[in-house]
Image (cartoon, rainbow, N blue to C red):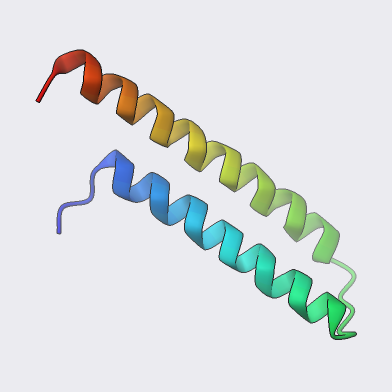
Length: 66
């Protein structure tokens, strides 16, 4: 498998959403960490960066052609 921008963007978005889901699940189960809000904000930023990578790579792929 070749690592292009779309693969990296999908991995970044998917991994960040999964990590945020795990943190929220732990929080709902009563496990409290003082740094969870900071981690959630960082994961949201990573999701936005991953989405931007996907948008840019799709734009470049459609602009240059197959």
